[in-house]
Amino acid sequence: MKAKAVKKAATSPASQFLKAISKANLDTACVGSGLKAIKGEHRAAIKPKATRRLTGSVDMDAALSTALPHAHRWDYGVGLLLPDNKTEIAIWIEVHPATTGEVDCILSKLDWLKARLKQYVAMGKLTAKAEENNVQPFYWLPTDSGVHIHAHMPQARKLAARGIPLPVSILRLP
Image (cartoon, rainbow, N blue to C red; front, side, top):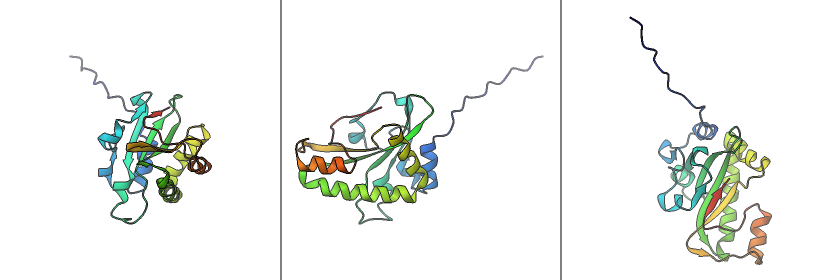
């Protein structure tokens, strides 16, 4: 009697983004596949071209709220495989009221995030890969109050000088 061949399950290579999060020793309860670590009301505003290219997400705010309770923490990180299906990048999303008075707060949060990306080298490298591939790594999603900053305003120029585009209600990922 011939033994049946056992079909081995296909395994995809582990996400570089999730490996980077693991190296950072962040709370695993704040990490998820795809966009699962992002709160539902915020997840609805994020539109990837293909969900299969999402490699993971992390709620940075929740993951570090106990360790850094008074810091201006950035909200979310997302791992994304570019259309070449070889290059993985990290992008970062902040959900915050989009008024002119909040620009300095967003820039403070950006400074905090950039300091963490230097500390968490693997995440920093994935963020740098985004820039190397002409993908904007930092995004601002407005809360329900809408966007009150427009391209002609000094606050928009201040954001652009620091590498943050104007807030968008729907974030279309590459």
